[in-house]
Image (cartoon, rainbow, N blue to C red; front, top):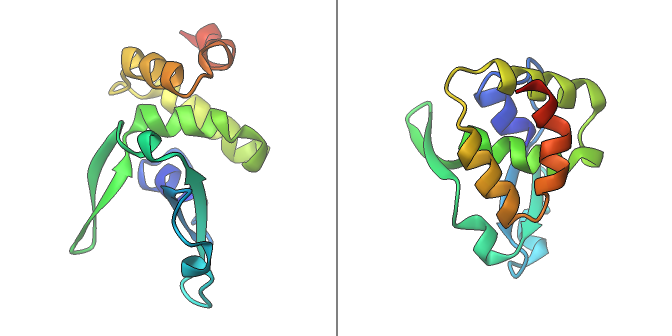
Amino acid sequence: MYTALFYYGYSNRTPLAWDIAISKDVSKSRFKLDYPYVQPYYMEEYLLSFGVTDATYGDTVLKIFDKDRLICESIFFESKIDRETYNRAIQSYIADPNKNISNLLDYSNKRRILKKVKDRIGIWL
C-alpha cells in the first residue's frame, strides 16, 4: 500500500519496503528476503483480479491497483497504516480529479466494506 500511495502521489513518504498483494496460497517463505524488503498482503485469489492496472517504474512495467482500488484497500487495512499517511491518502484521493467513485463503490462492495467506505469518503463528496 505505501508503495502504491507513493507512486500515485497520495503519500510524500518514500516507502521503506515494497508492498505487494499476493494470493494467500503462495508460500510465505518466498518473501523472507534480506534485500529488498518486501511486505506481503495476503488475499484470496479472486481479490487480485479486479482494479489492476499497469504502472511503469524505470524501464519495468508492474501490475498495480488503480487509484480507486488502492483507496478501497487502504480503508480495508486502515489499522495497518499510520494515521498521517492514511489521512493524506484519503484527502489526496478526494481532491484527485481522475477518481472514479463508481469504481470505488464497486470495489468496496466486492471487499464487503461498502458501509465503511461511505462513512470515510461519503462525507467529503
